[in-house]
Amino acid sequence: MRVHQAAVADADGEVGFQLDPESTGGRVVRHAGVRVPAVTLAQACTGTVDLLKCDCEGGEYDIVDQMTQELAARIRNISIEVHDLDESRNVRRIAERLTGLGYRISEKPDMWERGALHMLLATRAMDT
Image (cartoon, rainbow, N blue to C red; front, top):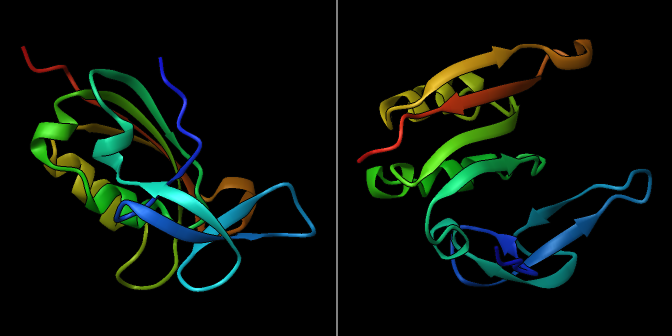
C-alpha cells in the first residue's frame, strides 16, 4: 500500500483546498484556499483496489467522471458520499454513471434528513 499526500482532482498538478473553520472537513476548490498537490484517480489507484472511499464534499463528480472501463475493472468497491448540487450533479447521475461501468448500486438516501446528501455503495465483480 502507498499513501499519497495529495488531493484527487481532474488533473495532476496543484489545486486549492478550502478549509472549513466550523468543521474538520474541507474541499477542493478551483482558485482559492491553500495550494496542495493533486493527482488524477488513475494516478492514485494503481494496481487492484478493494475499496475506494470518497467523501470529498462535492468533488465526487470530478472523480467519477475520470473513471474508464479499464480503471473500473480494477476497483472492486466504492463507498461514496454524494451531494445533490443541481440538476446535472446529483445522486441519480452518479448512480447511472457507476451502473454503466458495471457496478451494482446500494443507496442510503437522504442521510441525516438533509435532503441532498446520500451514501452509495458500488460493487463490481472483478474482471478476470
